[in-house]
Length: 605
Image: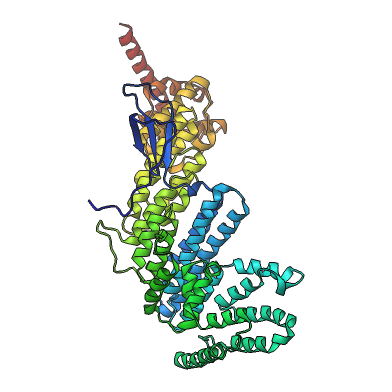
């Protein structure tokens, strides 16, 4: 047996004391735990231990619902399209997923409750990882464009500078605000040089004597080149231009152009990518991956994807305390920078508390043809395995189970088997829910499950003495034996009360009445009543005669048929009534009466 990657989490169960014996029962998405009667008094409590609590969060349910639509749309993208036309679609779908994550995160942040703080932090981490995977794997940005995408990634996830900037700009004297220089430095660290220049202008107006110094800094900031993927400039030309600018910044530092202003001198060192100066601003950087992107911006703007892992490892080592152990998020991001997709998925599966993220990300990466080489030893590939686990979890929820059906549908190897097993566990609380489940099964030709659902609902209706509903379900199940049983109950009720219940159903049986002889008799006998009520005595007589000669009536109903025949015999014969048929009816009645008398005499003796 393989060793587990991490020690399993210990779940403490309240009201269970040490040394007591425990019993348990596995469920589809949880486990029931209870104290057993073993040399001690028993406990009356049963504890439900759930693995995935997120599906019970109302806000996170929106995440599951919205992402389901995106998932279904992704499955419709044609695989025969060239990769160039498919790539923009995949990037768009990835952004849709991220927008759903962010919308849920913002909604959770508005609910100022401690219980949702952990969910917010998890969603923040999920969006951070997904965004990086989008840049590195899905969009697969080349050198030059890569750094621009990484800058956008950092800016999106390090938005506290904008809040600080608002506070500074809304103050009476922004240049004298305590956070003024923090905002300027943060703008520089994120490569937002135009905004940094605007902030520095406010300081320059307060210091007329240092205006030339600020003008030199403004020139350096304005001249810093950024690669333009849509332009005509090649990457080599950009690199040459960037090196000339870098040398100009270095000359200004060597000439002590900013020696009299420590803040401008620090900015100059930051523009040169000085490691010591960067590390002195750990608080503003916040994370090692922000440090990485800033270092690349000012030292290696033409970094290639294959070189990222080297810089990522060195930046994490420099930034983090040597005595601290990297967090799971750090390990996941490092694996992404190393382009180890499977390690990213594996670490996320361990670190996160549900399958939503890994299932949807893996599905998208699989469509991008990035997981073709990785199959599991027990049959299903990685994509299908994770989708099955996620969908199985959804099936434990009273409403989300309907989403899981589509996920099973798009798992070609084991999806059908999983769906057949899970659909049988859906509690059929109401007829409306039963019809939903039935429709799903009928659309997928799951005949065994269709019969099972119909039988369950028919039996439940019969127990509640709702004969019409019971008959309808048994017809849908094509269960001849059960339809016979219910038909006899209808006939018994008729003998007792003299009228039929659920006439609409019986009147509209149509070809369904052929399911069993007893059901055929019920339908035809009701038809006889309708003909009699409409005073179509000729047709009624013919039908009654055929019911007598067909021998499909139950023996207990023979006397009722004979009684029904008496009024017809008393009718005046019209010209179009054949005498032979009337005679035949009389003979049939005489024969049945004789048989009844003989049997009655036999019983009497």
